[in-house]
Amino acid sequence: MQHSTLTMPRADNFSETGWQSVLAGAVRDPAELCRLLGLPATLAAEAARAARQFPLRVPRPYLARIRPGDPGDPLLAQVLPTREEQADCPHFVRDPLGEAADACPAGLLRKYKRRVLILASGACGVHCRFCFRRHFPHRDAKNSFAEALARIAADESIEEVILSGGDPLVLSDRRLAELAGQLAEIPHLRRLRLHTRLPIVIPQRVTESLVAWLRGTRLAPWVVVHVNHPAELDAAVAAALGRLIDAGIPVLNQAVLLAGVNDRADVLADLCRRLADLRVMPYYLHQLDRVAGAAHFEVPEARGIQLVAALRAQLPGYAVPRYVRDRRGAASKQVLA
Ligand SMILES: *Cc1c(COP(=O)(O)O)cnc(C)c1O
Ligand code: SF4
Image 1 (cartoon, rainbow, N blue to C red):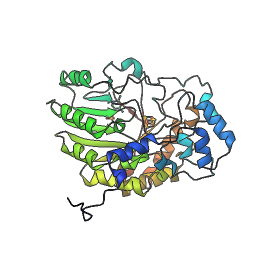
Image 2 (cartoon, helix red, strand yellow):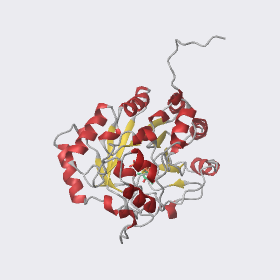
Image 3 (cartoon, rainbow, N blue to C red):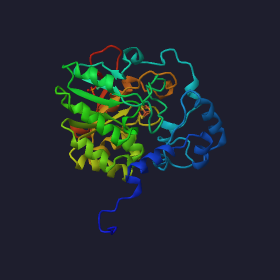
Image 4 (cartoon, helix red, strand yellow):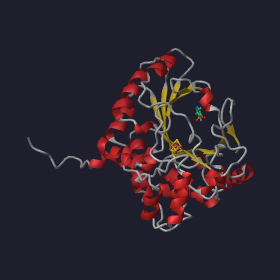
């Protein structure tokens, strides 16, 4: 048997085991993070204390985009636990959207008409310090989806399923392809949406098999990624997003407005412009959900409205995201600008 060297090179890290080992090899020790980035040990000690609430987790492809020696780096700010997380702020609570109460045991979250969210996994590729589900009591991801599938099948008003989490793409393509196949058998479903940050933090996750099962389903696939700062978009991420888009899968971005990360008109405009260059539509700019430990990331809504006006003045209409906030019990996200 001959091993052909003429076929397309398939780097090891484009295979399933490639991204899984990158996922498993994420930095979890604050001291190691600070050592790798040339940051003072005092920051590491502070991070170790704050990480007790919600552990540090930074995959190496994301780490490589952080400027060494710069404690103010906007990517570092998204992942490094700080003392401010321990501040007690009255309006910042563990479950700001009341999701734990809404979630049924099958891991389904049904808030809006015609769409249902499956919390497909409790795990993520990265731990974002501002995450609104940072205290979420995720069920064991090993559970089967049988009950969720049965509930969706029983409700003909549902036309779109959103795989969320955590990050659904921490699951294997085999498992996801099986789930997509089972969803496609439910006749009233029309679309399958993925909410994921993995193509950004571990671009190797966009494998041929991922593209294949997303394209292979009868359901119209939509992928919504999560990028907050233009420095998150390096060449590998651009290529990963290109693999999805070239396959005909629309990709949208949602960002969170974050103090010290992207609360400047030039940074946001650069982000939207680069997304547009990559053919990714800036979909939402979220007002921060008031989750305990994230108060220091909040930007006043009046400032957010000004920022979006500044974007509108310099970008094509399709490159301006809707500035929204989520509210408990509302029928949709509320558009602020
Ligand atoms: C945001 C969200 C959705 C999707 O809303 P779209 O406006 O369609 O993007 C669905 N379910 C929940 C619980 C959500 O928070
Ligand atoms: S990837 Fe999304 S769900 Fe996971 S920690 Fe970040 S914001 Fe939260």
